[in-house]
Length: 349
Ligand code: G3P
Ligand code: CA
Image 1 (cartoon, rainbow, N blue to C red):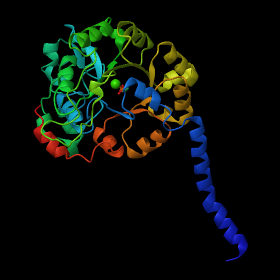
Image 2 (cartoon, helix red, strand yellow; image 1 turned 30 degrees about the vertical axis):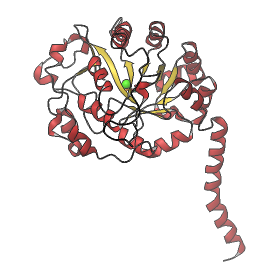
Image 3 (cartoon, rainbow, N blue to C red; image 1 turned 120 degrees about the horizontal axis):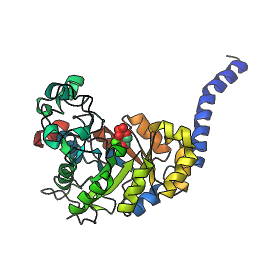
Image 4 (cartoon, protein in one colour; image 1 turned 135 degrees about the vertical axis):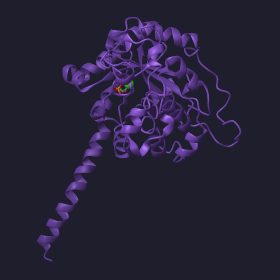
């Protein structure tokens, strides 16, 4: 091989490595990977925070008792849910505006499948099956026990978070709050009544019956045991007025970023003393950097694969909304690979 050929081979094999290295060096100048740690530590928010998006919703039907119990037992730092209100004023956890995707509303209440949640009473919602759709859509993860799963109220979620072997916090979104006037006050009052707006002393970090095993999730014992979130700035502001000590997150989608620009979004978050919950592609270090410099944490949604967790962690993201609690905890070496069957077998739902 002549010298020219060797030189060409070297150039073509080295250029990609040099570019990648250059990118990561540049990235670190924009935001060092641990820049958010002092902010998270001061608030007693685990970092990276593993937020069970709609519960452990890869393995069980979203926002059902099965998904939340599983997320808790796996060790998620926070149980995430979308708060809406029934016609008779009960706060429930449902993601969509309507029930048609995640329940058998079309069968039980024909003609009402396009109706929004606030047109149903709790008694009506309780007649619906929120589990069978999951079995039909995900044959590989289907379980007979999911059939007939009922809607979960916020009060029931609180009870789930307070029981069991782990102590997760609650990460609650006011979903389409313009349809539920006063939902922020309802939520704050419920949490207050249940003692969730004052700090909680956990007995210890050792699991009952095991003198060596450490608790994985303790966010429910810290001063940030509840975090509020919303895409609606007005709702975040209201939550701040009603419960100033509870951390809040302004969720950011593509449209908001396009309209306001990232710096505009960060300024808005600073004004309402909120942190940021952007959609996944806004996790690059040139987004996390300005957020951290403004004293804001970045909790990103919805991250379900290890390459995304790795990359976004390099960019300094402080927390992940994920359907895959089991994967994220294992990836960050917070918990060994779980025996999901064994966990399911001891859950009652
Ligand atoms: O709450 C974070 C993330 O859940 C926002 O998206 O649509 O899943 O509620 P969505
Ligand atoms: Ca949500």
